[in-house]
Structure formats: C-alpha cells, structure tokens
Picture (spheres, rainbow, N blue to C red):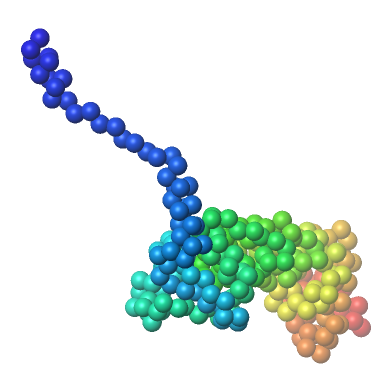
Amino acid sequence: MRDTMSHKQDEIYTYDFCDGDHAAELLDALRHFYTSGLFTDVTLQCGESGQVFHCHKALLSARSSYFKVMFTADMRERSNSVIKLSGVDCGVLGALVNYVYTAQVCITESNVQSLLEAADLLQFISVKQACEEFLIRLLDVDNCLGMHAFAQLHLCPGLEREARRVMLSRFAELVQQEEFLELDHEKMGSVLAAQSLTVQRDEVLIDGVVKWVTHDLDSRVCHAADCCYPSIWIWMRFTSRLL
C-alpha cells in the first residue's frame, strides 16, 4: 500500500489548454490597434492621391510576400517609415489593408480587375485567387478574349483555361465579337489549331478566318496559311473565298 501511494504522489498532473477564441480575439485586437493607430510602425502612401494607411510591418509581412521581402531584405524601404506605392488605386489599397486586419475583402464587378492587379503586384495570394474565381464566374463569350489576355498577363491559369474553353466551345458567337477582329495571328492560329474547337458547320470556321483576314488584309494575308495549318481543306476553302 505504501509503494502505491508513493507512486501516485510522484505523478505530475498536466492540462494542455487550447484557447479556441484566441485567433479571433487576436485578430480583433490587431484590428483595434489599426483603427486606433496604436503600435503602427509603417505608413503606406497611395502615390496618386497621397492618402496614407498606418499599418504594422509584421501583419503586412504575414499576408504578403512582397512586404515580407521589403521589410527583411537589404532594401531601402526596410528602414523607411513611409512606403509610397505608385500605380495602385487608393480604394484598392485600402481594401487590401482592410483584408490584412479583417480577413475579408469585398469583390465587385467594378473593382475585381484592379483588385487582382494590385493583389498580384503586392503578392496577396489569397485575394488574387479569390478574384480569379470571381472572374471565372463572370466569363461569357463577349468577354472571354479580354479575360484570356488578362489571365495570361497576370498568370491566372484557371481563368486562362476557362476563358479558352469558352472561346473554343462558342466559336460561332466568338467571331461576332469586335475583339475577335483584333486577335494577333499567333492567337488566331492557336484557336484554329485547337482539337477542342467546336463548330456546327465548316462554313462557320471559314467565315471566321475570312472575316479576320479581311479586317486587316495587307498585314494578315501573309499569315493566313499559318493560321489555316494544318488543314489543307480549310486553306483551299479560304483562298476560294478571297478570289
């Protein structure tokens, strides 16, 4: 009996406590610090209007690789208390700063492209992905060409893939769009060569090629053969239309 009691007295009772409210309360406190201007150590200045946002380097760095590198690498901005950001809309910059402190951002049809551009520039990855998903939901035949170019410019593979799918599956409607006439010969050739290109009648394809070439005949006729490759049949039908 004595040995058993001695063993129990030697045991150390532990309790691993995990505060389920910690993350939310911490974010709420940081948001209060931001709105109250407490403990801020850097000021972001919008280059166009001069509007400023007093922030915390640690929080900006936690959500943005752009700011993390800026504040840790041997860069001039590392020791600057004011960071001037040119080319970023003030409303968009404010939305991104608000996202840092709230985990929320309002994406609309009017701000989504400028928001994605800024998120891409400042490396707010989650916001960029959310904007890309929003744009995918807005895709239609009347904007797929512009969306495709925008996606390529800002490295949005999901949007690029879905925009191309719309282009190829709705070619008959695509050729009626003004943007179709402005395609460069490389993209035009890429569309015509795609195995997933869908047309109900071959004449639709030929009409599209003729319409595109004749829109700028002098500069495009030399690319017509490349665009029609590898289909000799398309090339023959195309040349017969022009003659």
